[in-house]
Length: 283
Image (cartoon, rainbow, N blue to C red; front, side):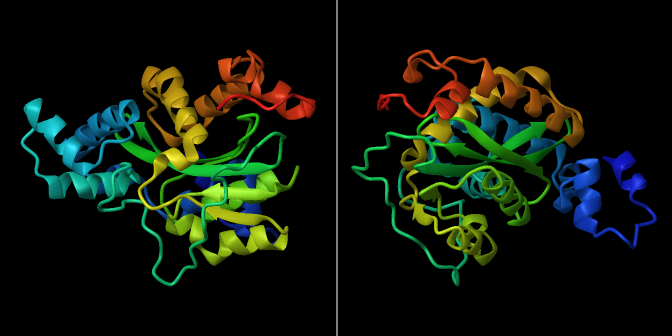
C-alpha cells in the first residue's frame, strides 16, 4: 500500500483522487486514514482474532456469551471491553441487545421486504454486509454484494475504516453490470447513509433492511463469510491489506466460478446467475 501511495505523490492535477485510487487499486478510505493496526494494542488484536473465530462459528453469540466464552478460556475481560471490540469489528448477535451495527439517528430505516417472498430468479434480490478481516498485525473491513438467488458475488471492496465510501464504491461497481429489484442489508450507518440509499433510489431499487439484531435475515451472506474465513482468511494469515486484497480476489473468483453449492444443485454461483432459467432453489 505504501508503494501505491508513493505512486500518487505528488498528485496529478489532471486526475481526481478517486481516479488515481482506482488506477492503482487503492480504496479512497485507505488514502485518508492510517493503518488500523496502529489503533489497537497487541492484546486487543489477539482478543479480536479470538472473537472473530468464535463469532464465525456461532454468529448468534452476542457480547454476553462471547465474554463468557473468553472468561472460561482464561481471558480476564469484562463485557464492556468485549462490546467495544465487537463494535469495532462490526459484529452483532441475533438476540436483541446492544447493536454493534449501528444506524445513524438521522438516517431513514426501511422495512424488511423478504419475509414470505419467493425468490426464484437472479437479480430479484441483492444483499450486502460488512465483515472484519484480520491481518497479522491489524485488520481491515470487507464489504460484498451478493445476488440472493444464485449466491453470486457481484462486487466487493476492502477498507481501513467503516465509513460509507467503500460500500458505495462496491454498489456502483455492481450496478455497472445489472440492477436488482430489491436490495437487502442490515441497519448499519453505511447502508442507511444518503450516499448509499440515494444510489439505489436512482436505479428504482426497493430498499429492504433486516430487523434489528437479526443476522439470519441476511442468511446467505452470513454463509459467505463462513466460507471466506474458513477457506481463505484463516489459512493465509495476511500481513498487509494488499495481500488480503490479492487473496480475497482469488478466493471470490474460485467461489463464483468453481465451488459447487449443494443448495444450488451442485452448480456454481456463476452458472446459476448467468443461466437465468433454473427452477426455484432450496434455502
